[in-house]
Structure formats: structure tokens, C-alpha cells
Amino acid sequence: MGVIIITPVMHQKSHRVYPTFSVRQKAGVRGGALSTLLGLLVVLALSLGGATYWWLNQPLHLASPSIELSVESGATPRDIAREWVEAGVDASPWMLYEWFKLSGQSRQIRAGSYELSQGATPRDLLRMMVRGDERLSVVKLIDGWTFKRFRAELAQADGLKQVTAGLTDAEVMAQLGEPGIPAEGHFFPDTYSYAKGGTDLAVMKRALHAMQKQLDAAWAQRQANISVKTPQEALTLASIVEKETGRESDRPMIAGVFNNRLRIGMPLQTDPSVIYGLGDQFDGNLRKIHLQTDTPFNSYTRTGLPPTPIAMPGKAALLAAVRPADTKALYFVARGDGSSAFSTTLAEHNRAVNQYQRGQRNPGKSP
Image (tube, rainbow, N blue to C red):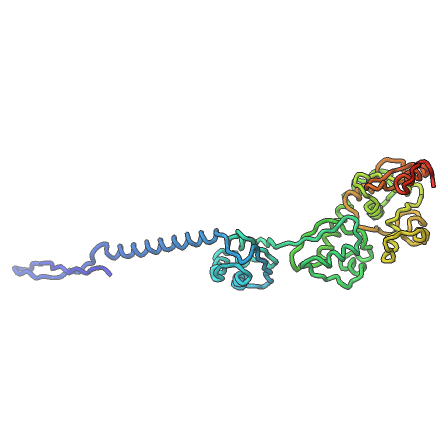
């Protein structure tokens, strides 16, 4: 409150002088106090703002090199802040919560599985959850795997929820919206990432769509006058090429051999198809009786392509199936170093077999 000053004022009426009193507040005293208070508040606000800015951009102290947390759907910002601290973030849960709230983005935090690493700041933490930058795991599917092997790999994937366990292959395809379509060969071999809690069915769906995309792209590049007449036939041939190839550069030539055999009605005589038809009965040793026993997949006793693919072909095999090498070769045999020797006649092929597989010193001697 200002200082009160009372001063007499003399007034003359007739011949007598009467004093009266004037009350006034000392100028500038009250305004100066308010200015000082406002100044202190400004300084305090700037100090708090500076401290907050400094804290938001300082690395958080973590109990380990990285911390994982699954933010559940419906969790409140206060819950999330507390859970991060309980998981190993050395910070005040109140400060984290206030930061989430004051940022204006607390309602944008997404549920998911997150990983916070050393060096991350409070800004980084919130940005990660708002963007939904989840910690991802990966599962790798290899060219030439069967659908059975594919399912086994998914079953072992860390953090991947198994929703297809116990379903038959046909039931899985129905779940994927492809009832009646054989599962074999229809999934593209690649590396697929997923968040913890994702499902095996979701990964399958991505692999299914990826194969359809790759097959469509390959079919659009097909050569004229090839023996396969539909994308499905191309997929089946590509699966055989994939299983028969030891060296990538040989794929077009191997596809060329099978293309020639299909054109003239000659049996494909490919061991991988026979082995696939044996299923769990195959013990690793392909015997003569296996080649002589007729099954839908026995390419020695039947002409044409097998009824379904026998594996998951990669991109190179798909392209080879629709763009085979221009060759007259009808035979090939493995050299033992990953490559193959190609022949146009049975006599040449027999000599190659003697040379590369039977170890005969006289390659000109036929069996």
C-alpha cells in the first residue's frame, strides 16, 4: 500500500483564515511495487521455462541400455508416465505426465510395443509414442521353403501371437480370404517386420499379397510362346526352378530346359517334385522305387506340371519361369560345385552324368 501524506491548505473567508486538509497518495510507490512483482514473476517464468526446455532436451537416465514397454489401448497419459518409470526410466512420473499433458499431444499417444534407448530425451519419448514408432521384430522366410516350413518359422517367432495354431492349411487360406486356393507357393519369401503382439495371420497376409504382386509383375514381363499359359502355372514352374537351382545364374537355363520339355510333352523328371510328393515319408534318401511309384507329384511317371507349387519361389525364379533362356537343352546335371551342365541330347547328358556324378574317368562311356 502507498504512503498517505496529509497537508494543510489555507483558505481565506472574509478576514479569517480556515485550514482544511488534503489527502493524496505518494506518486509511483504503488506502481513500483507492482512492477517489481511482475518482474519477479517474469524472471521466475523464464527460469522455469528455461529449466523445462533444458530438461526436455536432456537424455533420460535409463536403468539399462534399452527399455521396453507395451502401451495398452485405453491407458491414460498418467498411467503411461508411471509405467515408463516403473520400467526403468529414472525420472519423475509427475514431470513426464505434465510434459505429455502440456504438449497437447497426450491424446495422440498410440498403443503399441516401444523400445527406448540410451540418449533418448523426453521429447524423443513422446514423439515415439505419438508417431507409433514401435519396436519391431523380424521373421525371415527363405526362398525354396515349403509352407510347412514357413508355418514352423512363424510359430517360433518371438512375440508373434499364434492365431492359426491348430488350423489346417486349407483353413488358414480361408482365414486369409482365399478359400480353395492351395497354400503352397503362394507366399513370397522375404524379411517381414512386426510389432510385439502382432499375429502370424497378419504376417501371412502380407506375404500372400507380396507374392501376388511379384507374380503379377513377372507375368507382365513374360516372353511370347512360353509353355506356361497362366500365372498359376508360372508360379508352379518357378517353384521347381527354385528347388533345382544351385547357382543363381543357372536359373534361366534350367527354366529353359523345363520349358522345352513342357512344349514337347516330355516328363519333367525333377527330383524335388517327387520328394515333395513323398511328404513326411521322405527320409533324405531318394530311391528308385520312389521314382517308379506314381503320385500326382511324380514327374517321372507323369507329364506336365505338378498340381501345385512345391515351394516358395523368389523373384529371380519367377522371372526365369516366364523369361527362360533361349536354348535347345533338354537335360542338366549338377557339377558338384553348385552349377549345372546342360545337354541337348541324351548321349551328351549321360556323358555329363558319368563325368560329374559317377566319377568315371572316361566321360564318353554311357551307362
